[in-house]
Image (cartoon, rainbow, N blue to C red; front, side, top):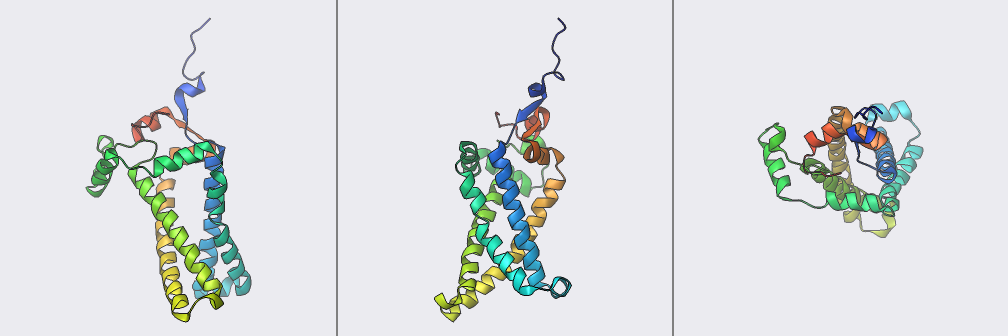
Length: 208
């Protein structure tokens, strides 16, 4: 019998990164966030508003997509694998400090940026976008139910909501740009598996 090669044994060259719960939670959240961003752009940019029209419908779609935004993560909490990933994202270690210092110095050497399953940049992004989503949801509710709060609250909520929405758009554009530059990372979210060489190079402290 001829010896088995690595090409014949898929698991030898690929490792499991994400299960169905993580992948579908990410996809659904991304879709809802995309709807929020597109409808917001159509509501606030005059050229888009004139092109699309039907402002009342856009407002309703924007509101309901925003309300539904936390639901995929809440539903995904039933998955032990997703809860474990959230624990990884919420835990910073000494290696994350090293990673951030290297990023600030623009040191792109792999040895200078140690990372476990998620690097420090991904952890910061996850924490920031989660907090921003909650603030957007809270301020959006204040703007929606105008009869429940004083005028000064609604005015403040509108100011925070609008400017934070602009910041979210910029940060999301950066997130998408980085994802487009890393096909293997996108493959992990699409299929759940990544190459072992990529895992060892980009996340050397991760032990799948």
